[in-house]
Every structure is written in C-alpha cells, then in structure tokens.
Picture 1 (cartoon, rainbow, N blue to C red):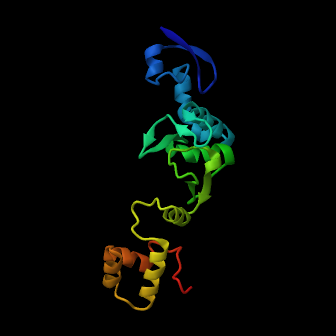
Picture 2: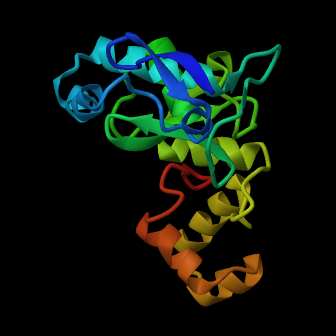
Length: 195
C-alpha cells in the first residue's frame, strides 16, 4: 500500500510505502533530496531554517488552551527535535519560531513550570542565575536544599569568619557546597543580607 506524501526539501509530491511512512523513513522524494538535506543547514538562510524547524515543530506540538504539550521525542522529560544538525529542546524551538534567535548563554524558561510546555506565551528568556532564582522562589529545585534566605545567611556567616564546616552542619549540606558559595561558583547572583 502506498501513501501520497510531500517532500520536505523540494515540496514535490511522491508515493511511499506505508511501512516506510510508519517508520519515518519517507521524508524525501529522492536520494538527491536526501543528499541535499545535509547541505541545507550549511546553505540555508535563517528564515529557511526556521521554516523547516516550524514544519517539524507543528508535527508534534499539541496546541490547546494553556500549556502546549509535546507528542514528539523526549529527553529527560523535555521535548526535543533536530535543528541545524543538532538536537534542541522543543521549548527553545518554540521561542525561535515565535520570537527569533536566542542570545548565547541565555536559557528559555517556563512561567508555567511545565517543562514539556511549548506555548510561547509561557516562555521567557533568562540567565542561568535568573532561572535558578526562579526555580528556588517557586520551590521547584529538587537539587537545592538551600533557599535564597539561607544563602544570604551563609554569605553573612562567611563574611563574619565562621568556619565553613560549621556552616555546612548548620544547613545540613556538604562543606563543598559552602566553599562553592564562598568562591562564587554557585549562587553568585545572591548578595548577603547586609548588602
């Protein structure tokens, strides 16, 4: 049995076997288009790349009131798809489609706290520090035992000369955690309470 499809590269209509369609092997009308697909990312304009990204994004996004869910591939609970010869997260793809490029070093964060959501109205840009603060404020940082207030107090204790081992015991964390705060490896965006 054959299905009529449209080539994702040249838009030519062609027939493909149903078994190939089910396995996702029939995206191109010919070997020529398949070969050109690798060239596409190096030669395409930003607009052409986004058009292709939108094509794949629209195949897997479930648009509805509120959060937009993802029916495509997942990695660590987040939607993912291919863009520019790399795997990117679906919510980042949504941002790029709706708002443009994401500055280097900037994250796409969720206001809804639903990591699978791709609704552009639920997304905002932030630095890693801003994202950490947002997670802690909302109480959704499972890896962090410390709150912003704890970190402010730790910085005050460090400033006062309290030994790191004693601070670690007080907050029930490893001494390395306190040392990382002291050296600015973590929580550098949080100032001590007196500042």
